Amino acid sequence: MLQRKFSECNTLQKNGSVEIRLPADDPDAFLILLNIIHGYMRRVPTEVDIDTYTQIAVLTDKYDVHEAVEIFANSWFEKLKDAIPQTYTEDIPGWICICWIFNRPQEFKHVTRLALRQGKQNLPLGDLPIPASVADTIDSQRIDSISRIVSILHVQLADYLEKEHCSFECDSLMLGALTKRLRALHLFPNRPDPPFTGLCFEQFAYRFGHGLYFPAAQRTSTYYYEHAKCAIPSIEQTLTTCNDQLAGLELNDFKP
Image (cartoon, rainbow, N blue to C red):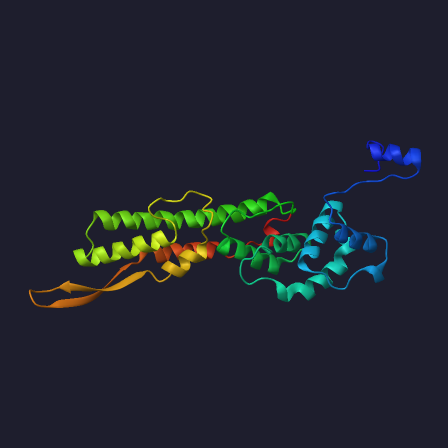
């Protein structure tokens, strides 16, 4: 910015000083960064909150001062590590950014796993310097998994509408249960489209993880019924495949 090709350089040479406006930079995080760079170590806080830490990560990447900040970044991380969410919260994108900038592979896999499994929309990046390759992978894997699950559930719905599997009573029971569960997830009567805003993988795992099983009474003669267990089992295999896919991203897979 202070090189000859920028107007700020001309102002500096002419007046001996120049004012540079940085409206996008968080002032508190920027001051901490300046104190580190200029060696004012006693002015650098020993602890920061997650919002300040995220902004420090943003500025560290913007001004390429990773090495200067590294010791403090590691210390802050250790003190904040217990606060890393175990369920998806609005802080997850910030944690992904922190783990990316400060090279924390284990925690990166954990927070991306939460985004994959519990995120209900495309990853909200804002101004965070998360590589497009990371964000796109999270979004595409989440959408792909939900799409496969939604597709197979609607196939099952059509199958029970059109074909006979057991008795009329049993098939009606299964169809009704499946319809109610699809409606509870806003998948019926209209099938949702990608990016499936409002839906996450773990909703399906919770509702369909063990299949749909019901005791059904089947008539064996004029006077007797036999109780059997009927099920829609095929969703379990799909959930298992998706569960394995949504294990979290490996940091080194995205580093040059």
